Length: 401
Image (cartoon, rainbow, N blue to C red):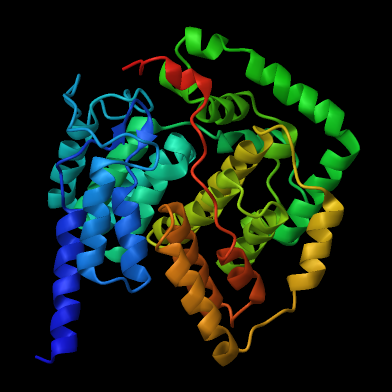
């Protein structure tokens, strides 16, 4: 075996060991997600040596970018079974029992059948944990980690937040031919109705009764952001619920969806919230590609309604003229591969020095850049790094669980 091949084998062994680690809970300080394994997948995808990935992982477990270390596994309140696994969706309890349940089911069914059987039920809740549960599952499937995929399924059940795709039946579909058409239409609606829509969002978010009556877990209220998303999606709005025509296409053109979401990110470069729409789209694609064709469309419907709920919950939407100008700039822009390889080396070298959301962004967008024929939008967006946001005043209160 050559030295280079031996190094690759060792790197993969290190990555697999880290992804199989069960030493830490999936969250810390209440609802903050343990991102360590997401970073491992991204860094491995960017070609970082295994020893450096392990050093990153070890440092993250001791002190995350939020200033807290990871926590040991928490005890379960319930034993999850086939009979009751749906009853506890989104109740943020018994994560490890969910892992045990899905572990047993995988051994009986295999990972492909496990995914086909349980994911369709979980997909409407994909925005739970601010999309990180879906990222955990999708990225696990991409790198081929069985245990991380088990954790991802358990985390999706643990944090389920419904985006209500069934409401589309009560709203006329739009005739948008592409995701960019949908973005431009919605941006136009916001331009014309901005005061009205902002007022609607403010009224919805001011109503915390769904926490009091148990529809939304109180830990999400402590989060702030996650409450805003859950509350907006729980209320629903015709602009969120209407299904665009492109979402019903027989064959899903994932690259068109990546391009639209990347334009959204370029309209607000470095936006911490919008960045997650890119890294979670990669996860949804990986999950959907393991489902039958009709359920792939279900995944797209869930993703789109969840995306709109996330954006609307911020009480704003990028201006149409800016999105249109970015589309004009990038719709036909393609990089010369040889001329941009040094640019990508710089982006990757910078990304691995930054907090883990940035290696994830670079990893996803470099892959899409490669498969899209080197569309410039992806390279430009990959260099727009984010920073860990400061925790809101609600964190002055202790976790609710």
